[in-house]
Amino acid sequence: MMGASHAVSGAAAWVALTSTAPIALGTHPLEPQGVILGALVTAGAALLPDADHHSATIARSGGFLTRGLAGAAGAASGGHRHGLHTALAAVGAALLTGFADRLTATVPLLGTIPLGSALVLLALVAFANKALDLGRSGVVNLWAGAALVTVAVLAWAPEQLEWLPQAVLVGFVVHLVGDLITTGGLPLLWPFLVKPPRRLRKAPVLRRIWLANGYVALPVLGRTGSAREQALTAVLSLYAGALVVVAAGQLIGRIGSAASAVSTGGAVAGLG
Image (cartoon, rainbow, N blue to C red; front, top):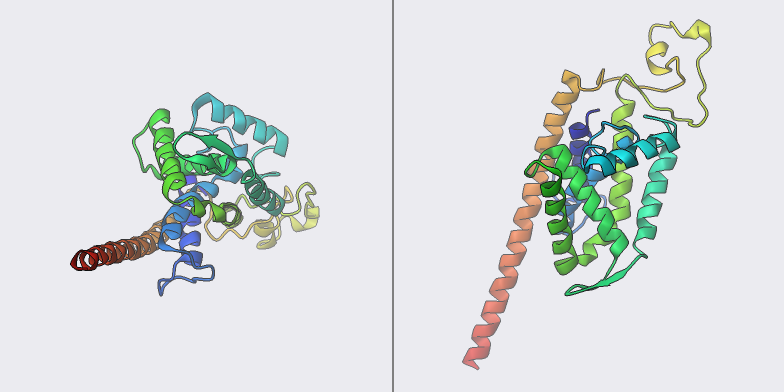
């Protein structure tokens, strides 16, 4: 899958799991702000496995720094669609995100903050913005926008950082599923690659599922960037967008109710 398709898939999976709207699964319901912010964060997390590729969205999001990190990640994991494209990597990323919460720092105005989680949030929002083209172009604008979102969360809703490991796990898994259903497939048993016997490599159906290099694929979308992938991405975009709008409406309604309650309370106090 292309970067934008991965990002949209991650956002769609998150809202499906956390929204309370009738068209959502709602298996892990969150407050509206968690649904909205989580959609953006999971979109960024769904790009993480491609940190092993020098020209992936992540690599292009921060100039020479992210390109260098992507190169190092690719070398350490064995190359593109190797170690970082496994269930083990997904679990590891979620665990590391959880451990990051233990790193704290004291900063002016905000006090003590979960620095590790804040840095994870910053990066994932920047990655999502890059993939979905949500902000103005340019590295500085990209990361400045992500920094504003991060500071706002730390100032007004730091509790929203508690679900970061789950968002990373969901995004990672959705990425793996997306690559599995393309012709490239995945190394499901990495670092072991069990290649099919020669006599089976030309079997009409099996050769498309059990690839000659030992990867496994269920290529319902065809090649990366295919028309089928684009169609699926369009549908998922509409779905995720609709649920984000629902969550935004719920949030605005709650803010309005709270403001009304405060206003009514002040009026009663004035009468008293």
